[in-house]
Image 1 (cartoon, rainbow, N blue to C red):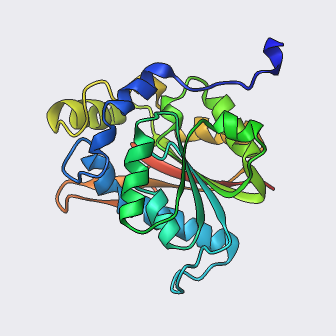
Image 2 (image 1 turned 60 degrees about the horizontal axis):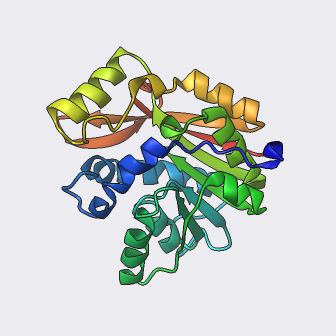
Length: 249
């Protein structure tokens, strides 16, 4: 029966776009330079939220031992690898198949055991997979059905589980910074990487999260400083990049 099929929120055009860039993932000066620059800021937020939610001490070796973590839209593994180093049992999933061997080879070179899979959030949920933490970073603005996708992420969480979700705000500033600035002026990203109309405001994302049955517990902006050429977290400035934390009660 058609109604028995899992809902598929993957947009094939988006997947094809990222497959073309797969080999570039681990080049810090390549097409994914913006993610390499943003990664320390993302990791600061992720590690802090996981530590707070699960009572872990980040000064200890492998503080995330015993936690099962899903990095959905894992790409080349820029977040999966540091999570594995912190002791988490990591599944990295990506709908773009060519990202997976890139991620697998790099993890092996680093001596890290990460379960990378060419699959979707929907397929994992249908298989009954459950995680303590779901990382949903810079994915929701690329899917065909954001509400369906966030709802699927909730299905993937154990009770008490934590979802970290980041995306881009939709306003004139984000158009200038993320589209005009990053794609046309700085040429950090290939033209067409982002579609501004798919960006999601913080209030809209909180609405999606609540409708999915999760409780939002935190949100912060990620702000680029062109003087220091670095990113930092902000309690107030969510005007372009921002990140949220929510819990399955």
